[in-house]
Image (cartoon, each protein chain N blue to C red):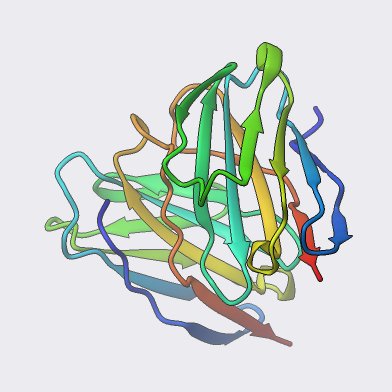
Length: 112
Length: 113
């Protein structure tokens, strides 16, 4: 599975838009890009998944350029409750989800 | 609908003892996964069940770990005998089909003294 690189931490303030970029230079043709969120003392929670271009749901947007070597998770108007660790995962999903590889993630801290 | 539940939430045992962790997946989910995070490390895959069959157990660290899913419902993960390096948080997740969306439980924290 492709390895990912993302910033270790980010700070933001309530009401701002937060963009977290993930690099996956070795992404394969069949690989999807999936983002998970994890709060302290909880298991990871699926946020969004995409293959190319842009995907949007009620929580976030995912931007994927044409070369797919990176992706950006966009959180609109963050609140204090968005403080969490965000993981970017790349793998042969949805056909093969049995080896999600979690990197170090990005620790997002939202301030009042 | 109930989510993935794990028991116990925290277990403290001494080195050499045995511990059994239990996971109840979301009803109807055929796929069940075990992951763990040991201190300061990343979340690592352990194994994957499809119903009662082990689809992939390549992440199991050694033969002190035994996972079962009799009847294809709940699963147990037994550590016998436990070692200090087994301390960490063990997560269970389930999914129906292969959508890329796994539903994780809150984890079972294991402390081996």
